[in-house]
Amino acid sequence: MLYFMFNKPQNCVTARSDAVHKTVMDYFPADLAEKLHPVGRLDMDTCGLLILTDDGDLNFRIMHPSMHISKTYFFYAVGSVDADKVKKLENGIEMQGMTAQKAVFTLISEYHIRELENFIPRNRREKYMRNPDGAAFAASLTINEGKKHEVKRMIEAVGCRIFYLRRDSIGRLSLDPKLKEGDFRPLTVGELGLLIS
Image (tube, rainbow, N blue to C red; front, side):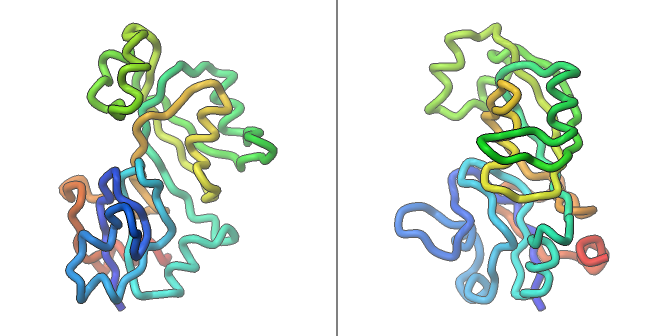
């Protein structure tokens, strides 16, 4: 069985093939890419930890909601949070007709928008920089589900907007900080144990 950790960059899609966009598989040699499939998906503009494997059982174990495997995301967002917003996020917030499960929110640091200009996507930079002294923050959110755009939608539900999102961990497995965006390496036996134990 094959197990790889990949640090997914932004602007590529989590798919085996795509007629328009670069895919995560394009970062792997062709002979390896044809054997692997990504476990779950990260949005095109989301970077960070992605597991690729040929082990269908591991894929099920990580992705099926009944397994309750947590995923932690780091992000920068425009806006600000207070105790009431954090309580809503942590207790399960309503978002567009559905309720997110309980989450763990950690505020890391508060900023002015101008301090994070380099992380703002080009297509949103002009809009956000009209208010360079506006509030922004860095935080992490740990969820146990995997609904489409869930982290972004949860933060939008408390009146903020994410402009940079990175997955840092799946369960007890964390992204190797030495692994550059676009690079991959095999999981160690110990790391695989963190995923399946």
